[in-house]
Image (cartoon, rainbow, N blue to C red; front, side):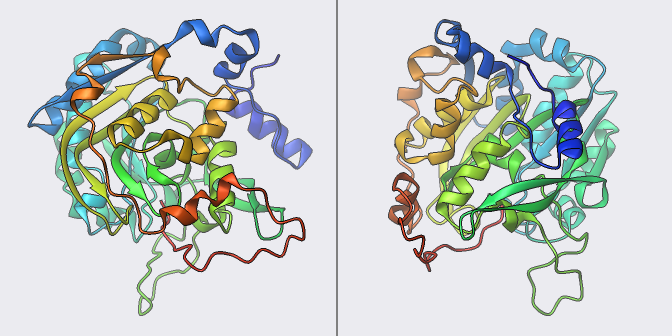
Length: 366
């Protein structure tokens, strides 16, 4: 079995005109049966300081992280779904904790913070959330992915069952990028929860640099983020799964210091949780996150697809949780009002293909 890199995929896609089969290391493990015995580790920390919690969550993986980074560029990818609402976006203190950790292992010489914010100009969010001050402190660069080169990738749409082209950040697809997902623990109105993987997959489609949802705005109005949402609950779950083979973090960290429940990722309410999780297997990290939120893992379509096809480890019995115990910190997050509608991904599509889109399928682009 051939292990394709992100670069191999892009080269084959350009030559062949369609997306090629993409195999990650966990696919090979699944095929050989080695995945079942290997397991993975996820660190769980608690406390009263975001930066300290993030730093401690990364410490158990110091050697592996330093070796994997090597001379690659490190991209810290926050999740700024709303450039004006802190609860919906990555907190600067979490980023500072990660930067302090990278400093402790001597890996700050080639670090950037990169984002394509969903709800407005990326740099406006950086300013609102205090990122510029932090960037000056650590001597790192802030990057708006909307202003960078992109590649064309085709994704699925459930309305017409045809491939649709989307502009995807070349920087996020580049195998020379060591990608760190710096996500927040939130419920979601399309896929139950948004954690480390979703932050990467839906932060990578780009938009016009000045895109705004304000109808009176004079900025551009083109964004490719909705294309990956696939026009429905089936489409978004499948695209998250399929794109995870190209767009996934090398290192996953989820800040649950203050989570969001209810109608996330934009309009939810805070949860005082004070947890942080991190690990090298993003699927294991997201699996632990789902458990901490009290969500039934069987209802999260895209993560189940990833687990079924060997893209990581989601079996809790094969995940070693380092530090705190899940049982001592599990909360039951209130789900989105439309959570029952989201479960349609479990059902076969109508044979006559006339099933109309659900009117409750609301827009939320990351």
